[in-house]
Length: 309
Image (cartoon, one colour):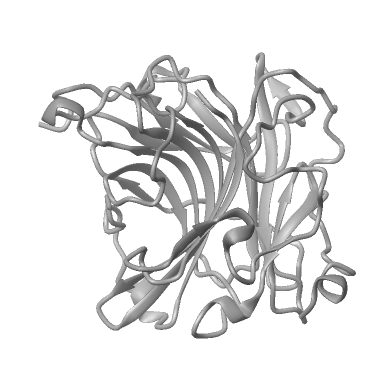
């Protein structure tokens, strides 16, 4: 599918259009990542959209990752959308990053989802927009932005690999800027579309993967920190605003909504948690948002040199 024919009907998500539009000058960053990891004979593929902060240059697709995420597994899905907060981490080690992400995953074997349990997912200050692809678990093939063969950017108003400074936030809650993000597939089309603030910015053609990716079986939201173990101990790079969900004032992903196979919004509650180091970072499902359709997930934590012991 070429760029012109594919972009003619992207069906951008407009589910948050009734909320007030507030612009700001805080830097934002996006990381769009597609990952295919191998779990025995099954293939698990991820598309990520993230609000991230990076400490200097970093190799983002390494495996020293700490997760505090929630999973929706009431598949099949045609994607997901959510409001992601954009925090300035109070502590960010060099060569590390702190992400707030929304992701979808698919597996060739649906039995993998039925056998999945909470915690099974692998634990495996320049702000910029980046798009990336890993189609072999990162062993030999990984790339970013338009260096990814087959990745199609459809909107030149958002320059991949550059700072996302003004007008990046669609709304604010209690002074915290939020960005509406979604990954979705249109019925009858094969690409997966990526949208930021209800504007389609890119898509991944189905030809990037060895098998067709018709639907997602897992929708994931929450935080991810790259833990380089500086000095041989766990990093003190914070996730979210650096507070645990138990504090009552941690970072929150708001208005998570699944996208059904007919393209409509689907009420969906996350039923699993994936937390790799609960004394470092954690996640809690808060339930239905009272202001806008969807569910909220609290996540985050301070990290720390001995939190994983």
